[in-house]
Amino acid sequence: MSDRVIVFRVDRRSGTAVYAQLVRQVQQAVRTGRLAPGDRLPTAREVAERAGINPNTVLRAYRDLEVAGLVEPRQGSGTFVRAGLARPAADLDGLRAELAEWFERARTAGLEPADIHALIADVGESHANA
Image (cartoon, rainbow, N blue to C red):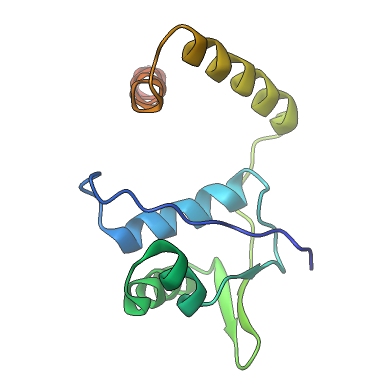
């Protein structure tokens, strides 16, 4: 077990349900190695207080993750990452560093974070369907 922590970010303007945003963030954190099997998720109360959301919303996200087999609740201990998602055999640290450099170039060129995310999504969709 490690001391890795996930900090949830809620975008109320996204049109995506808050619980679904939390599920996706855990999935992405596991997929990219920011969370690993054995890591403890913050309590529903902690997430609710930090993100300004209802604890039941967090509990729904955690239940969805449990049903998917990604996390497991342990009575009196919390909710823990149970399994990893299939990860490519790529150099994720190297790719992350390259992406961080690209992101900084995009910001320097005047793009706002929302523009950058839209560009990444657009490129990702066009390559996923190719």
